[in-house]
Length: 96
Image (tube, rainbow, N blue to C red; front, side, top):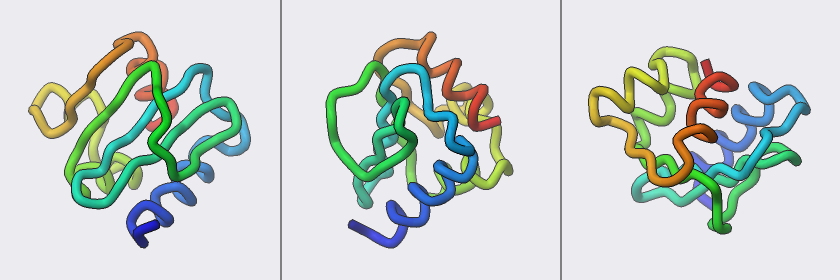
């Protein structure tokens, strides 16, 4: 597992604060790997998901750090979403 994925898993679990996520989402960080977020929190993995969000490393880090709104990233083309848009919106609420 890359250092970026490991740090992202830790940051996401801190943001989720033990609450998990209602659904299964996958973050694909280009050239690094992927993260699954579900009712158990965040972990490295490449499982099937309700929604897949894809971004470059710097975009993902800005979202996690709260410097970039996920909706803004999507609207500007920096974040790609494939799958259940409702799940993406719920996840965006968790990350904002």
